[in-house]
Each structure stands twice: as structure tokens, then as C-alpha cells.
Picture 1 (cartoon, rainbow, N blue to C red):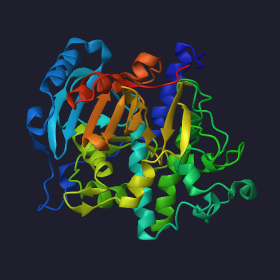
Picture 2: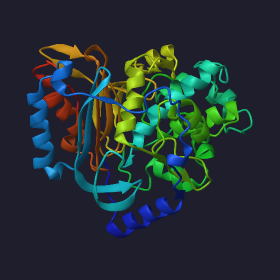
Picture 3: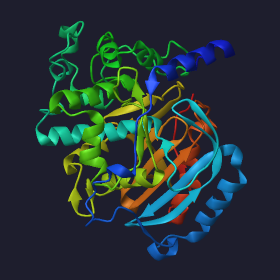
Picture 4: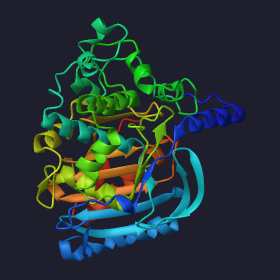
Length: 402
């Protein structure tokens, strides 16, 4: 991991990044959810749904006894019920804006950072199911018919499936720290025109062969949905995802040209992130309504490529990667524990364990900390406390870390 900037340059870069972005928010005045469906979670005690309460009590003590870990929230859903909901206090950011010391509560919005990508992936699945986009075989060139794409002939083999699985083969370096101005996401943001910037990148590897973490591809996904539907990313998300889930409070940071940051700019309540995760546990349905297509859920949670390099760190984790979802490697007593997760810078995660009917949401303030302890803290908390509560003893997360 490269980290060569001095403090003055770093401050300048952060200032440049923030002045190129704007904040957009939606509140209680834009509800619109179906009143016949519950907007919130049923709440039960862990033992009422067959969980062992003792490991979760230990987790609660750990969260409050180690404030240096800067975990902000942990929520656990078992079946249809919210069985654990704990909020702490700590330092936080809003997409780089220092918020200072925050006492978190249920209605406190939190950065999702790259967990935003999983939500954008769901929007793409909805658009394909609507017929607005022909399918994952569509070429990147055909997704943007109104744009002059440099070197379009060499880029035509790049398909939507490669964009979704971060294997497009475009030149992109997001393995160095985000404090380095050579980081490709930073260069994209300060360019003022993220879509043109990403489309201009050179093809350097055959599409579909090599995973390369690329936030720019998620920006393209959101833009492709807008191109195909004529509806802005935020409006599409609000009408097709947020309203059906009863999500009324959110912010979506915008680039300087007015487009939402599809890769990292969404802020939600952890309470609502759990609803989104529930869709991918239950074949895209929420209280009987099909919101995300069932086939898309299955494709998204299937590993399409092995992901070696992790955002901003250069770490070789060896996880699988689906369609904007990570496939982590949990093991217990020599057997895999099937899981998928959203994963954002700083510790923003939603884990789903389909065989256990279990969801775990964590938020934290460990932004740009990519050492092994900070990067894998959410995974360790799940393995050490949550999985034992579900009867899975001796769980570990298997990684190759450099």
C-alpha cells in the first residue's frame, strides 16, 4: 500500500474532493410506503428465535469496553425478527466531512461507502427484469449509445457481467490508499465528469479474466440504468427499492456535475440496511412483495471471480465476488459457512447467512484503515460472537492477507 503524501498535500486533496461533491437528502416528507406492509422490524429476544443469548451479551460488553475499535452499530436479524440492536458513540465522517464525536441511535444516518455498490447492483437487476436493459451480455459500448467512447472497438467485448463482477479489464488502480492522488477513484471524482473518465480508461486485460476493484464501474452501472430508463438513479432507487422497504431517511452525496456517487455516497440507517440485506436472504421479497428479481439475487450472490485486491489497501483477501456483492470465506470445523456481504470502507457491512437465516449489519468509523485488524474487524466480530450464538462454534474467516 502506497502512502507517500505529506499532511499538507493530504489536506489539500481532501478539500478538493469535498468541494467537488454536494449533499442531497430525503426525509420524512417523502414517505410513500404501502401502509399495509410493516415499515419496521418485529423485535424479539435472541432466545425466542433459538439463539444463544450469552455470546451476544459478550458482544455487547466487547462493543462498549473497547471504544478504540470505533464500532458504531451492530444489528442482528434472525428469521423475521430483529434480535440485537446496539449503538455506541464514536468519531464519524460524512463522505470525508469530519462529523466529530457522535452518539449513534436508531435514526442516525451512517455512511455506507462501498456498500452503496450492492444497492446499485440491485437497481441494475430491477432494470434488466423490466426489459429496459437487455441482459448481462450487453456490451459496455451499447449501454452508452449517446456517448463517444474512446477505443470503442477494443472495449466492445466488455459486457455488463464483467462490469458487475469487477473484471472489465480496464486500467484502474484503487489498491493504493485514497490519500494518494494517483488512486483512480480520487482521480475520477476530481475529474468533474466521472462517467467520461471511466469510459476513457484503456483496456489492459481480457474482459472476465482478472478481478480489479474498480469503483468507476459502479458509476457506469448507475448511469446505464438512467440511460436506459430515463429516470435518475436516486428516483429509481426511491420508487423501486426504498419506498417498498419503508426507507424514508437517507442522503446520497453527489458529484460536482450533479450525479449521485453510485460507488460510495449513500447514507442510510443501519436499521434500513438490514431491510436491504433481508431481500438477498429471501429471494428478493419483503413482506410478500417481490422487489428484486429472484434470479438476480441468485446471480448476485454467486461467486463469478476470485477477488484478490481490496479497496484502497492492496490486501490479497482471496474472497469471491458476485454482482456487486462479496463472498467471504467463513469456516467452522473444516466446513464452509455460506455467506455473502456488502462491504464499505471503514467497516460498513451487511452479512447474510442463508443457511442460518441470519443477517448481521455493522457500521464503524475506521475509514482508510487497511491494516488486517481494522479491515477484518467486522468479520472477526461475526465469527467470534454472532455465529456461536447461532450454534456455529469455532468459526474463522479464511483470508490470504499481504
